[in-house]
Length: 356
Image 1 (cartoon, helix red, strand yellow):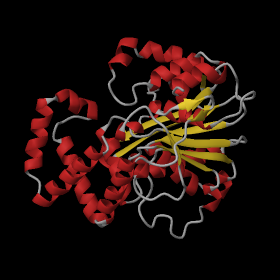
Image 2 (image 1 turned 45 degrees about the vertical axis):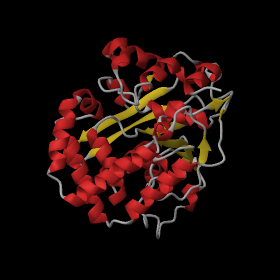
Image 3 (image 1 turned 90 degrees about the horizontal axis):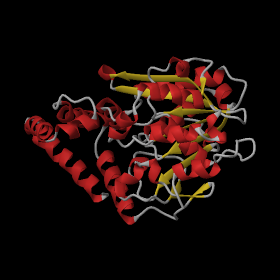
């Protein structure tokens, strides 16, 4: 048994032409989108850059000390990339069409990248929620309807896949899984015909009623949805595809960390069902969300993030690093909220604690 880092070492000597693409490869490429490729113009270009050369440029911009000091949950992605570059399977992949956009005033965090594989296909990887408060706010806004990143994902998929003769796979982890699903459903029949498969790795779903009147059967046949056995994020909102449930070395909500998912050979270690705690959490969250209309949810989200934004931080890690100072700023803002908002925020915090 092992994780995706162990898989890279074990299967790295075989190119995709010898050992075909599988669900574990999908998770690796979904997590690849978490790597910050800002400052490497070749990665953003149409011609792209081979992964081996990309890592050399990346290490010119980021020191090992800097990478090790990162405490965010996506901190392992750069180290994964460095190991990928050493292998026959991933080292010759071409990385191109990288975009990374954060628009605070629109609560938008969007990033994506195209990864060209040796089997002649491309994997379009949508980044999930990063460490920014803007990104987390957009995640919460998924419960109120379409968010800016979803529209950008459609535009990106149409632009990239529409210009290719080759077939593509589309995927992402966390919010990236939601973006992959949304883009694949909304990109139009011509682009859908070029999609081999869609991977939703523990991504949140869609608001109740979102699928009404939509012809999604064609895409659903191509979807693989993967969640850990104590999934919280991947059980949020409404889904139309039954999941593959996998084992994890973490507990509770920390199983959202894809590097904790357990692998045997070329496959995930599967579980029959969610844990009892995860099922309870899922029921409570659905009851809470279904009990409010769209306006009520939007107002509560605004209140919640006003508390976080009161710290002056731009990332979750900055709030944690602020320690007592951050807590004091949040407490002052929380004290100004309406009693009902305080009560609802307390229920969110209490519910999350159940799964940890």
